[in-house]
Length: 281
Image 1 (cartoon, rainbow, N blue to C red):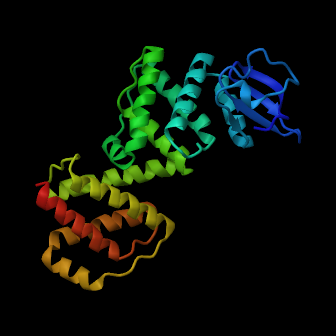
Image 2: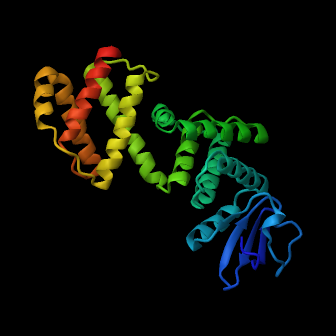
Image 3: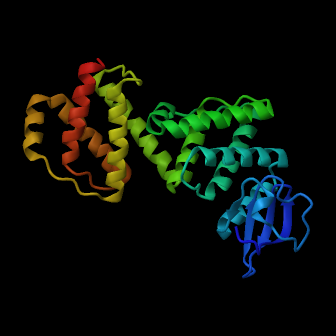
């Protein structure tokens, strides 16, 4: 933390606008950081347990807007859970989590008060794909529920987990949600086409979902895979049902991601599907 930061405006007890030595504005967030502060006062790193700094101008403006309609108690609580998230991961959190998670949780609380329940259709996939983020999200929701004496639904754990994953990987929540929705769609296709009741705790389900996640990420980045023509021919003859389904899944992935899918992907998907049909039927 730069010791030359000076207070420009106190937004509340936990949030202050400061200027650095170049007169550039930043927003500093920390427990009690704004208490008793006046214009021109210095902000020192040893004054609070943990400081977050919003340097991006767009993030600053969005955060200032949020503070105008969310009460200070809720803002402080969300800042506390973001500190908790930070302690549970070695990676630095992307500053956007202050805007995104504050906005999401405030809106979730409002929905709850209005009797609205938003379903999370890809909760199982989220738990499978991001187990540590999901565990920390459970802790976050528990803290919020206890502190505000409310009961946010289980689906919120999944949404918070996606925000946490976004903050530690610097990937947009929009892309993460899009990929989760695609995996959910593909898994529904598999269950319907193979007439399977898949055990979502089984190792084969876990492997398939994680394979789909990595495949989607590879395809999105345009990674090239080595062709597997000989193996593809064998699998097509040995497991025609799984091989044909693999190509149906590939077409859905191509349409959703608007990117070409390497032919080798049919080989890997066929093997996963065959394993799933053998052990989960």
